[in-house]
Amino acid sequence: MSHPYLKHLAAAACATLLVVASACKTTQPDYGRALPDGAPALLPLGPDEVPPRFTHDYWAKQEMLPALEQSIAWMKKKSSPQFFPIEGVTHERALKSLERFKELLETAKDGDDFEAQVLAEFEVLKSAGWDGAGGGVLYTAYCTPILDGSRTQSATYRHPLYASPKDLAKAEDGTILGRKTNAGYEPYPERAVIEASAMLAGKGLELAWLKDPIDAYIAHVNGSAFVRLEDGTLFKLGYSAKNGREYSSLGQALVADGELPKDGVSLRAIRLWASANPEKVQDYLNRNESFVFFTPIEGAPRGSLNVPVSANRSLATDKSLFPRGSIVYVSGKVGPRGEGTTIDHFMFDQDTGGAIRTAGRADIYLGSGDEAEQLAGSTRSEGQLYYFFLKE
Image (tube, rainbow, N blue to C red; front, top):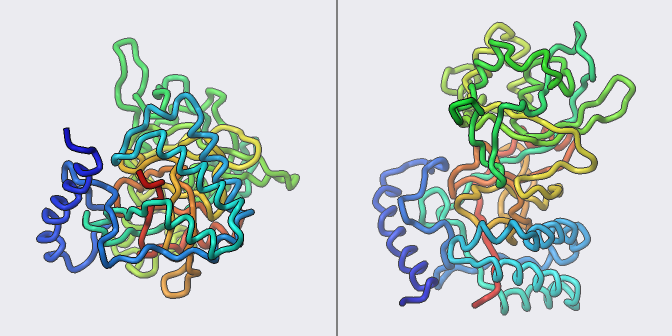
């Protein structure tokens, strides 16, 4: 029997050949393109490719360690082995990689020593990216917005955020099974039906009320929200579940219809458009069939691993492709195109998202607050994504 890693290398080579022809025909990267069937999501670096340099990140280890410890804690849960092996990476290798990385971070003499030891002991793999051949990923960003709201409905606060309804069923790993009926499961209604029918109203599911539908939509897109109540306190809501429907982008819909220019999509631009076109807002919101439900939380929101996510250190990827909880190195930018701040540092693969469904997409968690919201709403940056695992 051939070694699984040799199979991985062979698959990578085949996938590269498969995608070269189609990539040559593409003038612009299609970051939403799915990988060809059987193609690997992680590729070894080529003989001429240089791994990222990260001496500088050693000095930010106090920021890195809490997120790293969350990944280790998740990897030690009895439920985590079910998600391995993936991309040729076993659960044992993934856990040992995290533990050894932490040990090196804590014992290295300085940044140079840390970098040298990591590169000596770890294999660096690269995301197959949008073209399946390592062509790069599109980074967007998300946050926990702080939105003005109330625990009670009023003329000012009319747009609810809901807890999960009792008829919504999900598997142990969070996969949405659908709506429970006497005959079994059926697809849960899409956003337009939920909104138009008021099917959730009056069932005690309303957790908070917000001022306008765009605020509620922002909470849905980010999967969490801190609601600033009238007395100044924050009512913290985290992700509970969704209706299982596919996410589609409001910004992309507005661009497609000529409502916003292609290079002018940002959260601020969407808010301004909504203020100027209140009669169009609900129609465009309903084009996104996905609908998110929330739960009260303490502390930081939790990602899809059910561990708290860390600002600038937690990454969301497609969990059907990439090993959960793993060490990743992000090379990209956050903020407006052409004006953003470079991000070149280690993060941890601890979340997923409605729009993150290919090897060419990744989402950076930026924390909470107005600044994080503005940065998240304007981030759209091409870059590279690397994974680090102990050499076998």
